Image (tube, rainbow, N blue to C red):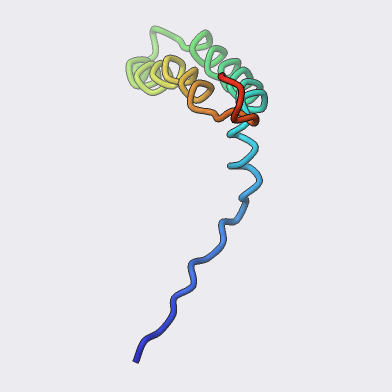
Length: 80
């Protein structure tokens, strides 16, 4: 006997769709970069956990512009 499976709908399809917009993605990355830069500036180098904190935050700082490059254009005829 065959059964049909129904996949659940995503909880917030609008957020994923809106982050595909380059303008929204740019503002999200600017806010994200402000948070990461403030964390990197506030790190205390004398702290025992400094290597761990810098290991976690620095890649987030370096890789964040790729989110903007991965966002899609709204108009397919335009090149982004």
